[in-house]
Image 1 (cartoon, rainbow, N blue to C red):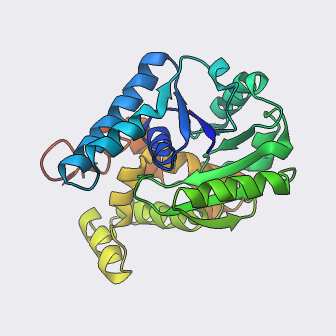
Image 2 (cartoon, rainbow, N blue to C red):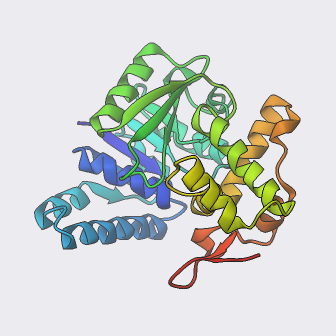
Length: 289
């Protein structure tokens, strides 16, 4: 078993902490302060309580899992960690600042990983203490449910680092896919143009958002439509990824849909905000246009 550090106690970071502790690893969970890290653990406790209530997990197993998660106040607590996973906002400057802060506290053998969904790993590795021990490990939301991890090695990522993190991912019960270090990797390189084009279609009046979602859900056999999915992911996150694709490739086909930009500028960033393309504050989502 490993000591796993998770930086970021929001939805993604808490999910990574939960599945890591569920696999028997000891987890150190941090955020911008101890209170937010403790809030992240409290959210995990609520999720486990629901599983216990549905008889999908025993109370003793839930208690044991929670006992393996320790909220910590700052990055100095990661000194004993074998693997540290950054799960902060999808903004390169924020991630680089985190790597610069945590790097001096890591051991000479610790691996540093980013949960980035689109930012080039080779470039992020420049802010790490050792690019050979830096890798992209892209989980999907919600982490406890989704069965996939994308592994992305940078130019300097060592074979030993890749092997260790691959074994860690498989130990969580996840399927592993390997992506080269290209903007968007595999999933978002394919998914984000679909979401972006759906928003273009909505903005141009091709169809209502309900019909766009229903058409893709039923016609493409997807579990949910692209506009609903965008609200679940977060419109701000979608926009950041699309901008990375656009700037990283220079291809105009990745230009962000104006309506997506407008919604993000309005603060209507999806389900987490209560409002995106749909209003999520009631019993059922209601279109906002």
